[in-house]
Image 1 (cartoon, one colour):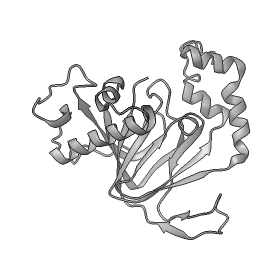
Image 2 (cartoon, helix red, strand yellow; image 1 turned 120 degrees about the horizontal axis):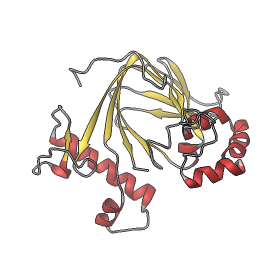
Image 3 (tube, helix red, strand yellow; image 1 turned 120 degrees about the vertical axis):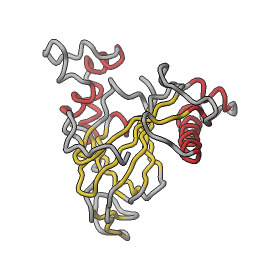
Length: 240
């Protein structure tokens, strides 16, 4: 990533002072010019990856497959083949960079949003998503016809919009407060189900306080102030 320039912002205004590269694999890109001798057929577009990195990424995918998709299956080949993975992305966030609260769009991600944290410790905060954040998640605000009715959403999401299911859940969650996740280097977080679809996630700025064994920052548990430096996250997502 050394030759990639830092970006001041992104089109969705969620992230600032970052750079990003896509890590391609033959299993997720038909046009990938893959070295068949490389383990798991991973390669980085315009970037060299070590054998250790390739194996680590495959281990993470296998772990997610086993724990979040096929927990009762002992057939590793069945687990891996049944999943369609999107290309991994490596995101380098500067110490002064921001990753603000958002829910990943259902148009670009499936049921899993997972990240392998590297370089620096950080805090991820999950908050119940508001109705407007759920609308952005579903792409309703950017509907081609501009009417915001969600006609171009998948059928199951149209049904949710019709009966107000997600909005009702969102209102019920609003009193639940936030959840903080402490992300030391080499830790893996996985957002699925309610945490993926109904909560926003964000990375807190440097010197934010993380409390162990307490809720909502009430000060009843041990705490640390996390000095977040530059961080890299390797993002894993399944296809829609």
